[in-house]
Length: 364
Image 1 (cartoon, rainbow, N blue to C red):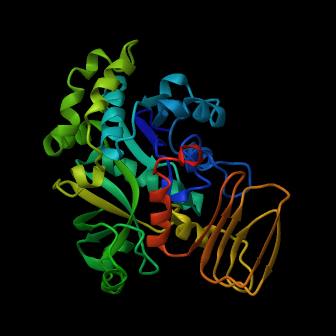
Image 2: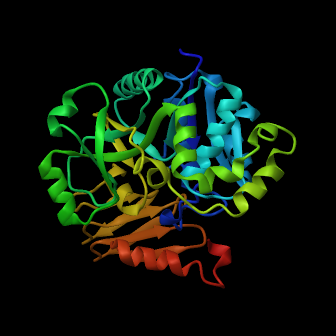
């Protein structure tokens, strides 16, 4: 393995769209949705062991999740756990990680990945990432892995490429034309039919020095507070320094901060199985235990009659879930919350927003 290759796992989100299973004290990246004993974070870490030297895998998370990270990846060196004071989205997260890596290795080439992806065909995944890292190491390019879409999905961002669908067959990056964030269903159908668009996987590959330059050029409001990082990152006063940096940073994605503006944006068409488990609707496609009426079910015991197209999830062991006569609902049962809501993204968002009101602090 190349000693200059690194992986940065972004694991600081609170997973609010998966409430009430995902909570502030233990968000979704630390949960086992598969029932196989591995959280999203652990699966992500193990996925990169065949690509990146073990000692070069880093995790960026919030300080309050330090114990959770170390519990799930006990072999992670403490210096490889970068702790943010607050969640400020991917651009500040990657600025922090980039400055850290540059102090550690000025020749670093990095993969940045979310901690909540599901990947099929690991052999193809490893080959794709190895190729992308090799390309990024030898070229000034900021690469996003783009997933060849198989349906018009409104939950994902889309990337338009030069050369149309014919470029997807080439095992190399393609120049980006445009980024579009989560289109409506009609536009998503147009994108799919055009053959020019890929889903934005949220996985990036680039030289650390190059992303530093582009961040400082296009989102100086994020990088400017890090001025003087050389004297603090990895030192005893690192956290107090970061507290001051993060206090006034605005939330910003690296897609918006850099990728939509830079002239160096490329996309690598990827064909391995991929799922971004971002909300209950996306989990519907992942849950394997669907009955003949298309109910996606995960429960220790169940008694279901005359139900169709529901998402039914119980985290309570040895509890019987009995439901009759519901269609297109989300039913989530935990130790202290029962949520029953129409399977409608807008209504689900309303419920989750209302949990932020005073009086519900114990249930967030």
